Length: 352
Image 1: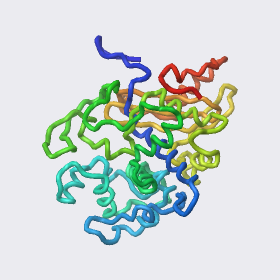
Image 2: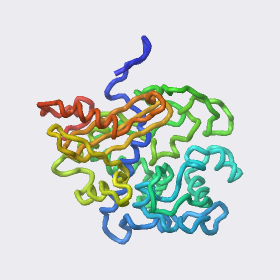
Image 3: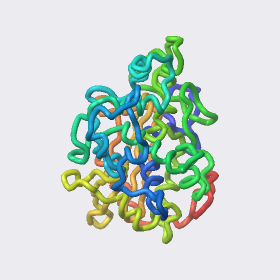
């Protein structure tokens, strides 16, 4: 659907969208898949991030905050690693990091991780959950460490996209669009200096004023809505092609009793079904300049994927499972007879 001025290119179901933080459930699926491996190198949710990555501040030495050594994989997945964005989100402060190293832009993933090893935590890991892009950034580095020779994106392709026959999803371009990718229309258009080099060139917001590639495991995938629908539908199959049931249960369990809705890479909601009974739902949203996304999976086999190439009207720029997910759920509850056809092949995706 397209609501724009005459002549604007019509958006098609197979068009590609940046999905922002709706990438985080994909990262969680891969991490949970790696816990299924056996042998001495198998990943454990209780393993510490530092035991895998062995990060050090610029110049070497011990980390700035000793609590850094206690952060577990599970805590990264629920944004309980100890970071807030009150001071800075390192994925969006490239100039600060480059200046600290005395180097030119762009900054590397290694520099981001090293820089943060020299910064204090804002709270004790595991005591609360405060949304953290950096925690998911570190999960991407853990995936790469445990799968030598494969980038984060290649691991997502190996463990999610290939089993489902998805060929379109890929990481987005930092400063441009892919073929059949939509144009992003920020609610408040802006320009800013590029962080992809030291030219100081002003670029439209979302096209180089932050480094999309560095945010890979936190929010950089691009895909069509039917692509993500196939991922959600995998959890309704008699045999899930992505995870064992034990891994699904692990992923969709809240480790912090005080944060019942915060799951490992997902958020939990409770919505009424068509009979008025409460059903669990697992969802995540995404937001970047010019986009708002929501993926929402009900435990009774109904899923929604909602992608916009524009934020919502202020002050609520993003989509929420508790609001838009519930509204979509209410619409679905009015359906009295669902068709049995598998429409994925209509959109270039293999049927289940």
